[in-house]
Length: 501
Image 1 (cartoon, rainbow, N blue to C red):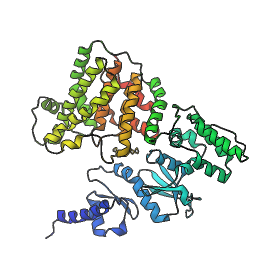
Image 2 (tube, rainbow, N blue to C red):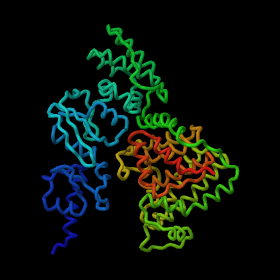
Image 3 (cartoon, rainbow, N blue to C red):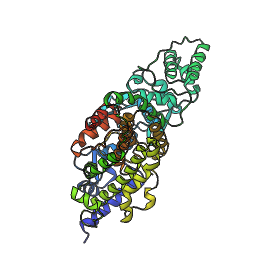
Image 4 (cartoon, one colour):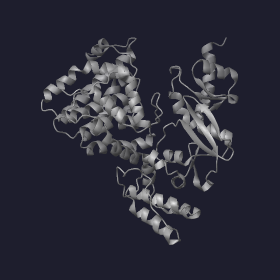
């Protein structure tokens, strides 16, 4: 007799076959009703719209959005191909966002297609697809990125609306920075006689410091008889000047974000009192806060810990009991806390804060998960370097950069930390940009808060605990920074927790 567990295993084998083919959007017709119902009942499958499903994790709570946001782009690619074949393309503005590494899940995805009927397809968590009847770019102006049909970079730059420069300036500046030569732009500008767009692009390139490209656009258009009037489409001067092409749009993005957001941080966060001269007392205060800090930081991550357990693992008196997973997390936190304190001691002794964390943060991570290595759950090589695959933030519309981008971003991130002169900016943007990149497969929130407190020490601020009771406000503030690029909420949140003594 086949047991229920064996039947579920059969259904999971079918689901695995889809995942082995990297199929995320599963149509009901591709699964038998028996497998479909069994997987749904056990939490392995979720209906998106009638006849379409995505894989989920049984441990997710009802109403949790993580699986949907993680599947969004792959689902849309498959769904749109099934509806429109090859006769569709995302909007120029959404194409630019994806070209520049912005994979935030939009509330409404705008799709151009000649087969459309201006239809809205409602999707989970108040997201949707709007397909409009409109021309799509020629094949030469189209690129396919993980199944998504996009305008090519030059075609998108030429086609995007003037309002985009004001609404998403970071996307537009990051896109312009990627242009090494204006030839592809000029081909499209000349073919359509787009003198107004040419004037806008020339001024936009001047805004980011690319004078040579701006001059080439103007002189070429004027040479064939067009009168070019430059009009800067950006509301403000660029926070950074780029004289040369940037190879990585991801790096350009965080550089632009850092420079644009730092002014808001300075307005919202109290000035640094200056690094303490009483180093012994400062380190003692950190020690005194350990139990409370561990309880709140681990609880924010969903670990069920008590202060009794924290003290038990601090002394090494823990064993493989029913609290094993939580005990390992607590022990790892204790070991990482000691490593962070050593880094802070270096900073108090005049070591450069950014350089210190650049060198020491791998050791923090190793200590955080060392008990899992000891228990045989992880291999030592699993803790070497940054993540080797995708990662998703629970409930967030922000999709962290891919593994290749992480390896470009982390050195650039530490460059920004080292170059920053204001401790308050290192505190707020250090934490935010680190978790925005999400360089590790796990532990990013804990490392981000350790980094924040190391930067607190660099300005003489006290060690600051983020209470688990404020978790929703904390995550909402980070989400606003990641999705809307509004850092004020997060800076204000941390400022209210930081009590200067």
